[in-house]
Length: 306
Image (cartoon, rainbow, N blue to C red; front, side, top):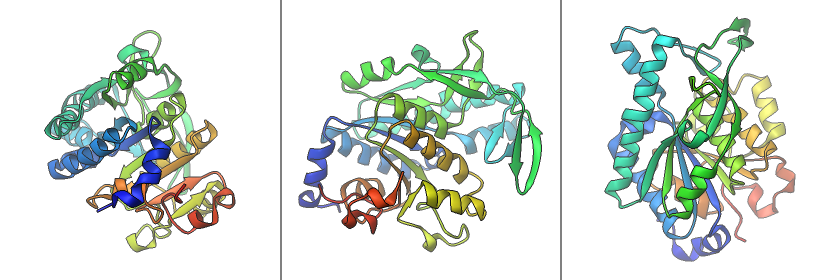
């Protein structure tokens, strides 16, 4: 348990600040895990932190597409969304997953409201043109289909909900200026929202405990990384699959003014609170330059006491 004495300096520091927390779709398939996460988010809210949740829904979208006989393809960790697949993605994200997250929040008396990037023109997107992508050592031109790249974020609807005391729960759908619905990577949406809200932190909750030196060894997690570290890891192939979009989103968030990004496993019972309220943390802290951190913080994944 995270002791109140240890947590108090952080509570004082973060009161009134915004945390954007991105929840991987796999977590919402386990009701017990989802409830534990909702309980931790409730703690953050009760101590005055303003939380926005962004969720994915990859496993559920893939499963529904399979039941409907629709093939699913990924390139570079990102989904190729055909017009046929988009319908299943919309049903999954706005229906199954968003409702599951809201139900978990309801169970722990956490006031939450579900929205998508389409609501209030929250996320504006453009259909992604075919692009050349390197995947598995080969390069190819890929048409991602009904997938959008973010053109802008209008966070007014989120600010209104936060000011009213709610936790917004955002699904990563967006629309272009003609009202065409597009699927947008949830990690990218979370980073863009974090920048728009001038968030103190962007937290990715994942199946892995953090960034791994060796993807086959969960014990190889690194506690702290900066842009130089990430570039070296990517060059040697240590970052791939679903982790690569998160790392790219972390880079974008850092460039957009978010000071600290965390990648944390969602399985440990108090991982989120440990990461936020202790110096040793529970996952990987990402910053622009490790050398700029206080000495006490460079050895831990969490935060040095203020």
